Length: 91
Image 1 (cartoon, rainbow, N blue to C red):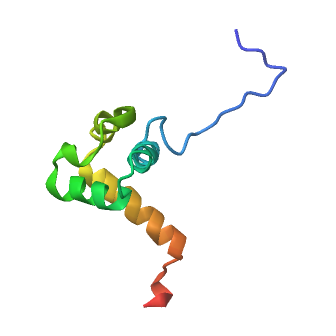
Image 2 (image 1 turned 90 degrees about the horizontal axis):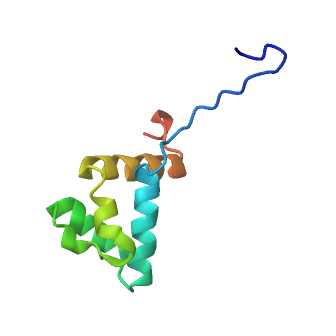
Image 3 (image 1 turned 180 degrees about the vertical axis):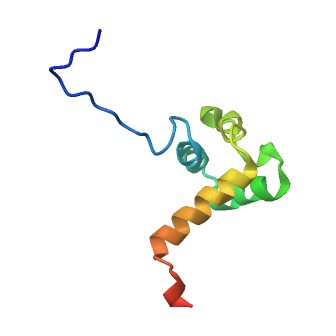
């Protein structure tokens, strides 16, 4: 039975563990460690769907394939827009 004398905490996670943001971060780190340009390699993967653009170092190739390519683009575009503070008044 629930203890009615204590307050319960409820936390909503904004992103599930292993979400797209984390996937991109892990892949970015692995590509950088191996000396690749992470932007070029990730763009190559997104455009072609060919996982060989991503190194197998730190299991990055398997990790990036956990997300759909459109999800990767959506996450990157969302972060870019947030960073640049775009709004309708800027048009």
